[in-house]
Structure formats: structure tokens, C-alpha cells
Image (cartoon, rainbow, N blue to C red):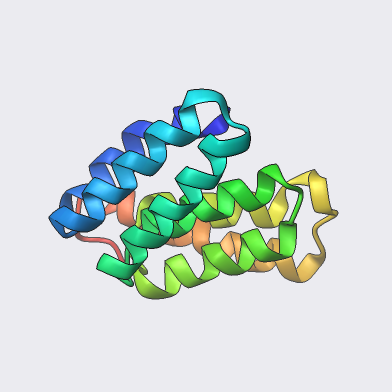
Length: 137
């Protein structure tokens, strides 16, 4: 599952979250990685929502919910969750990267507008990297 490859970025991003949000996020990640189906997915989704209840700007929880939506081929819902993650945490690298990727993945035939939007997020990420940690635009 794609979630495993994101674990490191998620864990780093969670350092700034409240302890309660971090706990629910970690619980969700464990359930989602367990088998990726059935009760584990439902529990992961519940834990992501609890993380958002504890911290409404927890971008990592929104990214997790977006990943679950993508797994169900609910592209519009996934992209809206990712946009909300970026809106709440505009410098969150995980949210920016996942939104740019989701906007341009071939699974939902991206439009020119979606490509332009994604380019803006990639440019922001490049600017953040170019200027060092915490110095991007």
C-alpha cells in the first residue's frame, strides 16, 4: 500500500501536532497498514477523524483520509481533502506533494487547469527546498 512509503514523511510532519492528534494519527496508520481492508480501514478512518477533532489543521490526517478515498477511486473527494490539508497547513510538504501528485495522476485524466494547479504546489515545494528548512515561500 502507498501509505507505507509515506510513513517517514508523515512521522516527521506529525512532530508539530498535538499529542492527542499524533496518537490518533499513529493509531490510524497502524490500522491502515495492517491489512488495508475491512475493519482495519474503517478503524483507520475513525482514527484520522479523531486526529482532526483533536487538531482541525492536522494535514497528515487529511492526507490519510485522502489516501483512503483514492483507494476507493473517489478522486474528487481525495483532491478536496488534500486541498483542505494544504489550506490548513500551507507549508506541509506531505500535503503539497500528495496534492500535486493526485492532481496529475492518470487515474482521473487531469485537465490543463489541474496541471497548472499542481505546478504551483511543486514550485512551492522546490522553493521550500531551495531555501532550506523553514525558509521557503
